[in-house]
Image 1 (cartoon, rainbow, N blue to C red):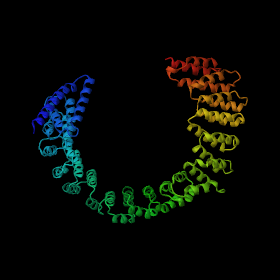
Image 2: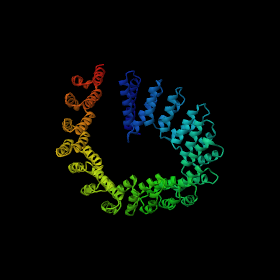
Image 3: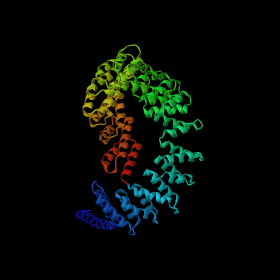
Image 4: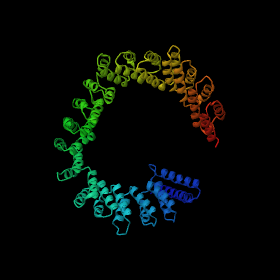
Length: 592
């Protein structure tokens, strides 16, 4: 070592010593801000010292932290130092950490063990093994902690030492031993697990099974696939064998008729994505019980192989609901244009969605043909729904044409399609269609589509103006329908035409408008509602609806935004004692 290198180590050590000693006071401080600042400084110092190429600095700081731990410290301060030592410590830290394993405080002992587990040096692993060999009395959790630590470190050669604890009656030690041996995955450990398994039963045997399976060794799977084993154990073993490319057993299991083993093959197909295993599942799917057909369809759905569509398609007609649904979902990914007629024939909501998502050549062309073909109203409806899901905005003019046709389902689907993919450019024509079809049941569907478009619009004022422009030439019934759409926006632009309609000479329109205004949610309707309710020409029934709406909005206002003046105006406008009392109660509540 050169003089310069030696000098740099000495200087680093002296700086670190001053820093750590100073931080000890901060870590022990009663002032929370000072304590947090010291914790952060220690964290930052350790981060800096552990950077690449700063081995001397890291070692110096670690040794100084060890020196700090030789002092008598509060548990929380000691834990802070140990946890940072866990981050940066190497072989130089091991003696201090081993000493702390005998500390009277259980938290410090546990922190020291964790620090040893996280320490990458060979000395740390040797120390853990030495601690486990010691005959010193330890509680079960600490013993389990040492065993777990060796397993977490994948400490080579520790299997024999750990295996001795498999016979422990303590559940913590037993569980830690089984888990650690599976992590180490050494021949000695696997042999010990297998031998111990013969002597155990119940939950302990299950734990050993799990440990053996986690080793992911073909020889383990072969042994546990023996016919003498329980069906559940054989199934997991079978899954492991198949995932390790032991495919001969997969074909036998699929042909066995044993549902548990068949389920394992299906799961292997899903996890391993092996083409040969997929073929086995595909060729057997028709003979499987319904619940396994659902599982098999889920596997085939993500196979990426459209050749499987031909075995999936017949299951669309299954009398078992979940099977039919799963078949449609699978075809949405692996179907072909030949699947289109069968999905249309199925006609379920899932089949429509599948058609909407099916990305295969020729699908759009077939759907367009089915949508335009006169005759079967249901088939046309399915095709139109699918085209809308596919986002075919270029077909909106065709959808308007279908919407005025006699077929109830075709008309309804066409209108819903426009609502799903249309925008403001379609709003005027859609509103005119609603006016034209006001006496038809489809008018309600048109209204819903109008509302959908308005809710998606980024310019509600323009949408409102477009609807208001149609009201002048519309009948009272259509005006009422338009008002329902306007109310959905609850914008200030929608409020005026609604309040105007509340003064309509048409009794039915006025009643509808008042009902809509009475259900308004925003504070902006309070003043016009009170003004309308104060009008003596307003019927008592309409007056009551408005005043109750006013009372509801006032009650919902936050205390700091409660408008007492409007509340008083509302009180003055009331004609009946019932509404007066409601508003008095609101005022009293807000004044508390």
